[in-house]
Amino acid sequence: MQARLEQLERRLAEVNLLLSGEDAASDLEAFRRASREHSELTQVVECYEGWKRAIADLRTAEQMRSEPAMREFADEEASAATARAADQEALLQRLLLPKDPNDERSVLLEIRAGTGGDESALFAGALLRMYLRFAERRGWRTEIVSASESELGGYKEVIVRIDGGGAWSQLKFESGGHRVQRVPETEAQGRIHTSACTVAVMPEADEIGEIDIDPDEIRVDVFRASGAGGQHVNKTESAVRITHLPTGMVVECQDDRSQHRNRDRAMQVLATRLKDRRTSEAQAREAAQRKSLIGSGDRSERIRTYNFPQGRVTDHRINLTLYKLQQVMDGDLDEMIAALSAEHQARLLAELGEGAQ
Picture 1: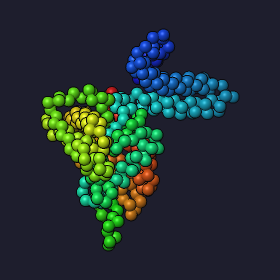
Picture 2: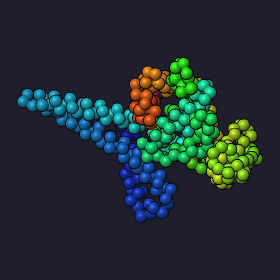
Picture 3: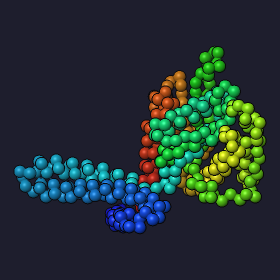
Picture 4: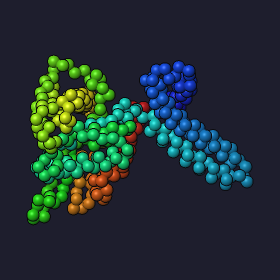
């Protein structure tokens, strides 16, 4: 590990020279890449420097132990230096873990009502609010791309774009089945019902061109939009439905009055879904050899239960239960996400340890 860290130190010096050169700003894309690399390298190298200082302090304290008058002080210094070195080494191991190239991307988040009828659709609306509030706490931008509302005010299906640095890194473990246990407002006998929704989180494709979509492999249909929106949406064919013939994927967008903008949004959603499909297929092949502790992200996998009578939420992948359901539904997902991320990092570290043996 030390050889790699020394290599990163040298690379940071090279990047510093690149950024300080006269031609640094002439290529904006290269400048952005170098700036991102500089930020990542600086964090690692500063941690490495902290580890080296702690090791140097430890050696100094060990030398002081030879003097009887300094032995007690030296023992305290050695203990403190050992603790600092251990902390810095643990942080270095996490910083050197393989990076997810999608971590900084924006995401498309899809919520679909499942079993439970109207109650499931209402729960889909509650989940949407939870994620929107979480994004608001982060200062991220959100945009409803497509929505199919239910009669009681929930959603049969809703797609939201969440735009913000690190959105994928924070939300990538949310894909799967979300189950709710509560007494519906329409339940006269006060019985607890169980219903479910599925959530799919996908890193957004940078551009449609990132995924090659053959125009001959799609069918585009336009039609009159339905639902809220006044007379305009019902009189013009502004809604767009795109069918990807090889996979059978269908994307509809009708929230905008402009057919052109609806088509662009639908193509972006299709490109993101195709990108997610390729990634999922690659992960499935890898999962055949290694099972993830966090879970595969399979849409059919039940990952979480929201129990309203008991005020608790449980993530089944890591056996974590929090008795703060109302705060979670109001977007306070930090503790849950931190635990999932920590478990993911622990798995990666274990895999690296197995590979080194």
